[in-house]
Image (cartoon, rainbow, N blue to C red):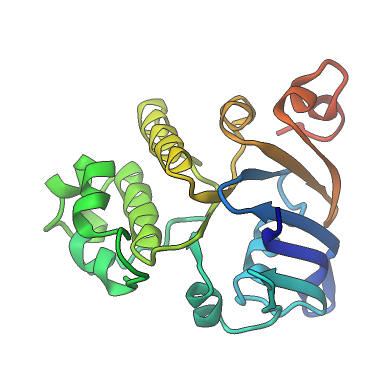
Length: 234
């Protein structure tokens, strides 16, 4: 099956400080893939380069066969990628519903609507008139996911999906992502909860010093003497 997103030999950095040294990764339609690694290894930089928030110095980013490396963020969104950024970055002075409709896009029948987002996250319906600043961290993360879904993406990318959230809220987020997986949405997720990622994802990639040093299945990830011991020490 042809990959929906193909990242090939991607190089990027900030000024003279290079961070990515040839990242290669692919995600097929309906597939769930994780990007793992210790802090400072280039995970967020990879996301920023894919979404046009950072211009790559070399490499390709193909979306549905089109090379969009270095394209502006709005073109990446139009191509079908939705981002839940690290730190949530909701609009703090807008209400919940205003946040959800601010970047909404229609992509044919059966897409995401306010009612579908509220069904996925009932707590947002209860807070629909609240400003972003009046939400808890978990509610803000639900809102960030809902806002990305309202762009009706073919691939949802979550950078630090459950960072800093209480265990009960993390469980709600993982349950929602499982529901999205069952619907066939492709997902790329970054998180530090290896056990949850192993249960959730189809494949995993580990980033170290700006390059993918390992990729494989959940069984391979959790195997004794495997990459958890050699590459992951959060």
